[in-house]
Length: 362
Image 1 (cartoon, rainbow, N blue to C red):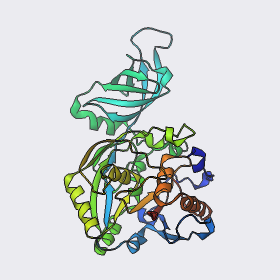
Image 2: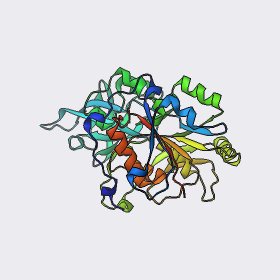
Image 3: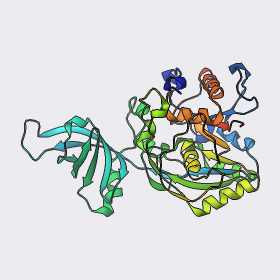
Image 4: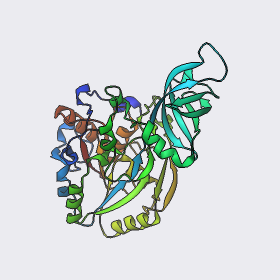
């Protein structure tokens, strides 16, 4: 399949720059499987709701699967310093986005602009210095000259939330984003992007789901910056997915297997939870403990092993995430759903509205 098959036009005015308040008042588009594909776009029917209506679509015995990763303040701005005298020795401003922790004070990162920074340079972040090594294109390794136990507090003091480029290009991150860009479930620090479907959940909504008999289960997938990287090949079969570390504990795997054995459905909150769940599931449908990096790339034709329903935001055109939802609910159905969402004024992307997708019938 070609990347062009997953293109669509989105008015810029529908890109959300702030989340709905309260969070569970965001709109929810229900994409059911009442009509099997193939069918004309006119055959599909969609339900317009809000997130507070979610319990109406679930039943006792269903399981909600959430990602408990926590976004770190991974974006830093500093000045590049050079020990070797040169005309351009000091004063070059650069932006750093930390992408993966390699050790107590060592991080992989993206540099911007990368051409101003070389191996051996030091970047000064308001008095906190870090040495650059291993530069390859825009990527490099930063080693901070601080005590390991101060790493988290240093980031909290110097860093800002790594808002997605389609938001950051329109406004700077601020203190409000420190709360807005974390989910209710955030606990395990390590992500540089939020699992945004989880942003819609509130204590009141969780109570309503619990009262309905829906159980809550947790996994961890540290979302990396690759979630925003464009697909640069024409044929999607040639695209290499970015790797992200994830964990499904033995307890969670056993509990989810029990849900299926009892006839319940697994409802994934976000594509991150779904990708990790599918990575941990055998071809026979058994969910196993998992602790590794996953590079799973889900496109139309993929046979889902464990996920039954998916709660997710509206994604970028030509993106791997739009390919995933097309695989999950049906390509023609999702194109029609996005057309309906655009015509109905749904808000898109990380701070936007949500959708509830039922898995396509096999």
